[in-house]
Length: 282
Image (cartoon, rainbow, N blue to C red; front, top):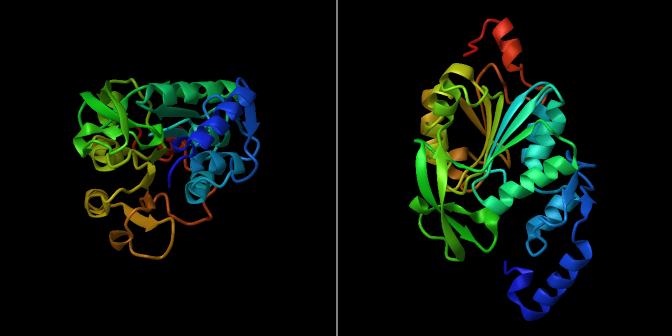
């Protein structure tokens, strides 16, 4: 779908809208994030995602999965946070005793996460302007006109890439092992094809701590199924009944028997509660 900004008349409309809305905010009008506020300075006005964010209909299956699995005191990793809607939702569900670690390598998007966290007075969101992969280091990030489609150059140059930049890269296992990150209860992954590398880079965390994973797949179905299957995880399609292996581009829920995919779940056992129950803590 062509963006509004691709046409001269559309660019004029967008320019007017941005002037009118500059420095303001808008309330999410539905969904699990009802009542949250989004900075209009960072809202993607020329993309259908902007409508979905404001109306509260963006990726409803992800919203519902977070609502069911993020309980008070939970630690949530939002890997590929974009402008922070799911970080905001997770932080509001986890409450003051919980925390959200938001990872977003595009500088303007990371700034949006911080701005939206401040706008909603959610001090439990911690923003990391880094990419996440299997090994720490650095990589080239291809950033298209719509920054939510940014991806590492290893996956090929995006046809609408606007520019490239070098970004720091971390692995989750390394950060946790060295004490720079807490252990997550829930991990949301939306990284435009980098999901297998992200999961490989948190293999020890998956094996030891059993977080719930909510992940968007980009033609990576077979590789993700194989990786998490080796660790005893079950995978379910959040967008229908088609088998995950054949479902193509979808969102999935990855759980262990400790965290069933059932809608009866109100929230995860927090890391502290898992420790008290005798499950691995660190």
